[in-house]
Length: 139
Ligand code: RTP
Ligand code: MG
Image 1 (tube, rainbow, N blue to C red):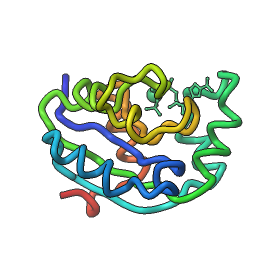
Image 2: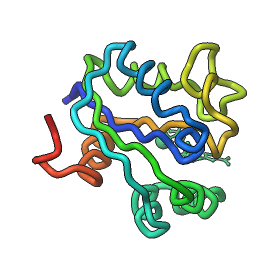
Image 3: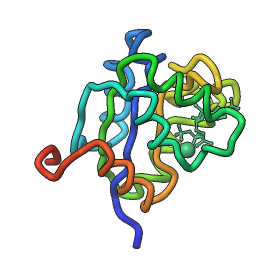
Image 4: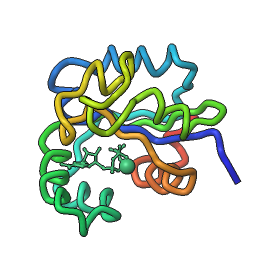
């Protein structure tokens, strides 16, 4: 069953570059409501767990190292058709291929340092949201 929630992270590159405000503004202006949000860090172990689905991919080590290199913002977002609409809003994984006006086109530096994460399915949105947030941290 399709749900109306997705999970996102503002990645360490975008936090370090001062883009938290700009990215959140674009997300909220695009009609997403905040259900939960926190400013935190991922240890290399936690990043490894979060990205476990990619553990056979050649970029897994680099990805876990990068995602634990500095603070991130994690959030659960709500909107009709959340998964698809959010992935459209962030743009292609590689910012060089992302459509003009998308978050990655505006704020990302490279395919690894690509500013934001967006869940790719309803099941993963639930798993990823549960990874970061307890029931008491959601509104
Ligand atoms: P995300 O999960 O972060 O929203 O990104 P995505 O769905 O667009 O891309 P995915 O295939 O799930 O890959 C997860 C993250 O791994 C990094 N990556 N690096 N060096 C590379 O070739 C490469 N490919 C992917 C990116 O940071 C990507 O967001
Ligand atoms: Mg993905």
